[in-house]
Image (cartoon, rainbow, N blue to C red; front, top):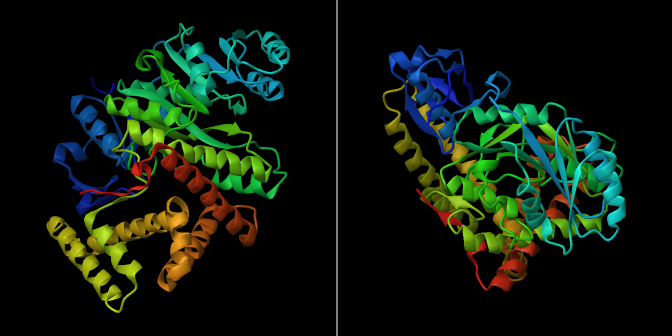
Length: 461
């Protein structure tokens, strides 16, 4: 299966063109791709449009490694772009009405009432918009409700949209263009807050740091990368790629499970932040904390199904050594960390020895890797392992120092990057509460499942 003529990709903003255009350096993890003279001629600046088999092969390689991403607006539209919207809902008639108003009138919609306590209100909204209504006698959960709708879909594509979502007019048509790649099974937009002004400080934090917002960079979704999963709050998928759909045994994490099953089967999932779906974030602290904890409880069930994907952190061997050296805080820690970084820099430079300035590039790559390692270590201390950190801080001054540095550095770096309209104090408080709630959910699921699989970092080459 090859990419069609007209398929256009553009280099990721962090992919470097080096050696006078004879090589590319980028992707995740970073790699060096040398280009033949013929391959170099396929590029128009930082973009490449498929015109023949050679271009299709190179574009496929670039998108597969994360060095480039499809340019959605420039991709050919599907031959048959018909789709059906499936909406799982339990009560929430006001939100359902708002969502259905954002869907084109000529698009078929299936509303699945997942045993609402006031079914008449949901039925009235569905009827008012001409949507097909499916009523479940017993609450099946989001996975079961979506599957009930999926079984009735007769179009080539299905859109799953939660009732608290509002669709932009261009979101679905743009995502459909990603299916020009025959291996793409699912495409998802960026999930952002509703455009209305935030009413609480928690809502302002969520608008900047929502768990559903996967950032402003396009990506091929893949475990172990910055975009390792995709949310089902809003997604577009090929019906024939979904099989039986979501795992109905899962009440949380069912979207992550489906995403990873598709990837394991050799299919692709694309994240496209150029288009968005607005989400009604929680505005009360108690509701928000509970939702964060619920997200965490999905860790252990996912660990049983996908043990190779669930690690809370993934380190290279040298990254694990660097983190360990700094955490012990001995007199030799800084020299040891420096030695690790020096050896890694030399090893990378040798692989780049036939490019201009190999040591300059190697230093930059090593620095990027070190920052990633420190960020993951910080997340372990303050998020995934915080109960252990809290206990350890009672007895260890070094651990107290490490935890304090991790917490403060995390807030300082993320606050500047997010640009949230919230003062640093409340932002920092929300950031720590976010970590505490999610980590509590992870530990609850680990204890319930009698397994530490969801808590163990992975060291891999």
